[in-house]
Image (tube, rainbow, N blue to C red; front, side, top):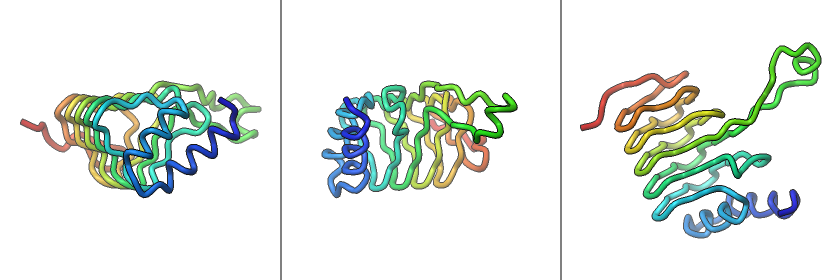
Length: 144
């Protein structure tokens, strides 16, 4: 799919009032999305590498969440080779819940049934059935 069409589909998904429509548009962009997934309003998914994002069945992503598969560096940092900015896969496990405004960074796997609290910045893997929160996100408790 061309970059312009992909961007248009992501913009439509971003502002769509229906979560089912959001999911179908994001699938067309290359995001791997399972069944019964909820994606909230204004969720931003990596525009350059959507194929590196996988969301498993029954996951729920709250409004305003950002999911990134890569992070670019400034020209200054690239020239000095201070930051590589490689592309890494992001996986959100079955039944995971990512609350509003959370940021998921490249290379993170969120385990099955895990909860990411609102506004958290997740830079490390989240074990299954664990609640994490904060900047950076740290385990809060195990979910029974």
